[in-house]
Length: 414
Ligand code: AMP
Ligand code: MG
Image (cartoon, rainbow, N blue to C red; front, side):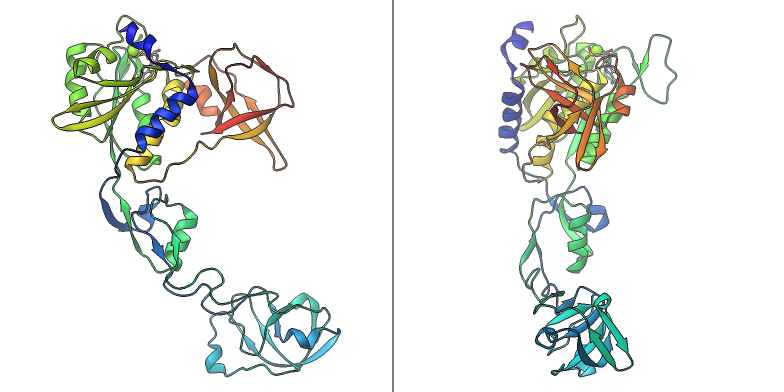
């Protein structure tokens, strides 16, 4: 066992590459049609096409007057106001065809009538009865989006493999899709191990703790477009664990928590090995999360990838995000995504030991032109209260011991 662990300790970059490469070999689940809002967080299994030109008509982008730009090159210019067009108006029916010396009052989102080629903002005009004085020149096409400028009918406006969020929902709604084809949520079995654990609806004994990892993992799985299936907690007992593990292997992905460290009762790897598991790594040079295990088990003609995530709650959360997430994305049909690393200015100095890539819970905030980040006070990787006060990790490379206040550091948002 310890031999196995020593053998496959990878650097963070190597481990991440390993999961990305494995993810690329996986096929997504079956597509299904779903209501547009139920698709949020899931991945499109089809391209979305524009059903018409966008915009479908030359669209005024300001409230003001539609004019011929040539008429207002010398200002002030007095024009004859020949009507009013509001959003939704039928300009063809109104028969407006702007001629030289004419203007038409127009609202944002309204179709610009034939003859007009620009809109003057109302702020630069003065109207008196049927006359309007334009006080500022406009260029041809100013404040007008031509028909089809955003997309042409038949264009792919969102590609298959895109995760549905609010902007994708806007496009789907705009092209008239009340239902869209998405990949079914992959089933992700969640199996917590540990003699000290009780479920959240049970009173814990004085030396017991509640199983929080199954729930935090289920939340992360659901948010990533998976269907979490929480299995009963497994005791630190090889025979009991084997039974629950077999159940978990029916899912598309199996996530275990706990039991992968070097303790006497850490039996997860041993039981996985007894089921013929292939291990891709059995540790990563990170902190928290060093004992994380990744592999697959082929059983009953089905191969199921698994992660053995360390049981300390912060380790469980961060190793899910760093390593399990790409596999879940692939099973959910999503195009591969890079980790959303960013940079922020450290508000207080930071000291760690070298040798491991660290992911330290921190709070990202500050003003728009100077994003700041601050470590949260924590008692180490078991401190789930600290994790709840954080919204990101400060990422410290293995060769850095100290950062000063005011230095830019790499940050990974939750
Ligand atoms: P392990 O990885 O099994 O050695 O567990 C490391 C630490 O995490 C121990 O303090 C455990 O009590 C705690 N732990 C393990 N599993 C869970 C869980 N499901 N929920 C909350 N804490 C856990
Ligand atoms: Mg344990």
